[in-house]
Length: 116
Image (cartoon, rainbow, N blue to C red; front, side, top):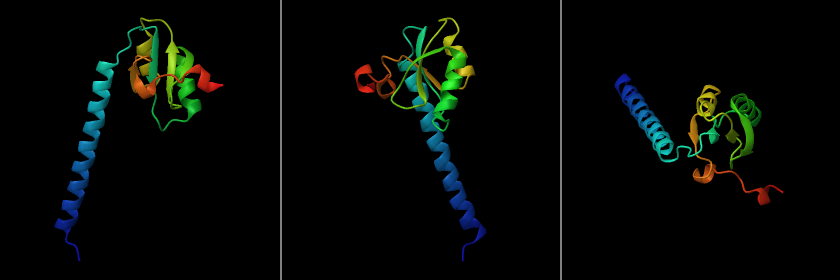
């Protein structure tokens, strides 16, 4: 039979684990954002929430700029637009991260020959 103290200890352990996981994710996004900032602010890779449907991500991206391609996942879209406002508009539309599409690694656009 468990006591209230046992349950409290398990709950605290779970909460500490979740907090650590969240901190790691935030740190990863911060490091990626600094290291892969777009060289050309008129062309960016916008990373939308992975739990969004492809249609929702595409609609949000389209409200921020012209969608010119996709990354290796349906929530990563390549945008072109006004260099002074593109990144800000993409974030306002829901993008979690803005990267340089050429330096984004697995987020990079799919080569055209593999799309055919």
